[in-house]
Image (tube, rainbow, N blue to C red; front, top):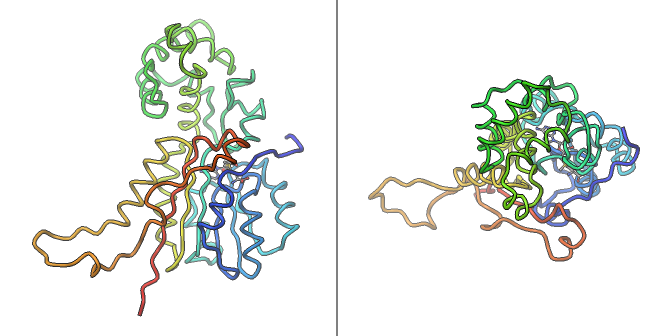
Length: 315
Ligand SMILES: C[S@@+](CC[C@H](N)C(=O)[O-])C[C@H]1O[C@@H](n2cnc3c(N)ncnc32)[C@H](O)[C@@H]1O
């Protein structure tokens, strides 16, 4: 494990103001990582409590140290956030005032070569956020059949050359197992036409994204967790989600939309102002990073923040 956990938090100010923090509130950071967001939440929630989830052992002690410098009113849960409801109930928590998701991997995870997330470093094909997880990128690449590989490359990577890449992976591993990130990059490069390779970013980007999503079951975990955390929201509470690609954003947008929309049967004479809504979107369009942040943090370019509020009904 590296000593310095470097990760620049994305949309930090927007998240802090978007969560509308109360000093005595109960908040959950589902993706603690380097505790960048958690730290700022804790500073404002000095009489409340903060629960932080992360499935990666590497960040836990570093984050604990950082948070302890602010206060002791926090709990770190080393688990997948898909278990949010179960774990919070075990802690005696039934309702929360706010939840944050800052999805994906941290810069620390991405830039630690031996974690195997990056096509820029040569390393064993790992890509697990949770080091106790059984499935690794090596297993996906060397044991999934052609159809399953095509399917995940297409669904999770939106890769046009899914079929040719899957075919070449299957052919290559019959000669010798694909063990490292660079061996995989070579197979991908061979499967994409030269003209395309010259035009569009790194040729392995989409496939690495797809394998990472599969290894960590990222989309299903997020969908399940988001649905559960909405049910635990206190009136006036908010859920903030930072997503980094269209698949995550689509899940968030769809779930939030279902909560906000009120379906009125045809021919029922009711005015919009008379409809009692349970939830509202804090901003119609997703919040994106400012020019200043974009210049300072490359990761911020693809970040989108959506916030849902459970409306406090007037009595
Ligand atoms: C983008 S980083 C968060 C960075 C953090 N907000 C900060 O400012 O330092 C995402 C973190 O969430 C964790 N993570 C991603 N998916 C998770 C899941 N399903 N359950 C628990 N932790 C998860 C990763 O291990 C990683 O540490």
